[in-house]
Length: 243
Image: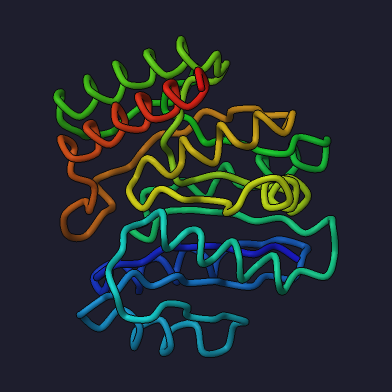
């Protein structure tokens, strides 16, 4: 089974295109779509129900907006309680169609080669952005450099939603931590990456072009707020490591 875990928050403009892209996938495994709704107030849930009616899917969430970290954690917990096979995989991706699904077969193949966590990376050789602001690229690059240096993380991208996880590594994280993801903001992707590395996960990156022009509506990530979350996470974890 491949579980697609997709956090959504007011994505009514993107759901039709997202369905078209996911529906075009040709994979051998059984697919299950897990939408973790972070308190959408538009027609996101109704459109998911309409478009995915003939697919295996579930919409999670209690109607409260807590942030992408909380949405991811809800989804991961549901998948771990539902998965019946240690060979199951979890694909996490953005709901705004900026994840390049053409590289997914390569990511899944690498998972079959015993990599526990595969990251789609705009910073790996061959990756990049088709359109984004200089400020966003600069702050992302600086934050990534600092965290790679201080946490000794040997990957180039830290915050991308688009990943493939083995269920095994998620189970290991859950077994040793009180929760898979505690952070509620976009820093959650760094948190779960660090936790996976602490469980000796085999991690690899696949280059990806980020097609932000495919997004309908505005990005939900606020650059300044996320930058502050990065450094708050840094201080908290570095202080904790010295206690």
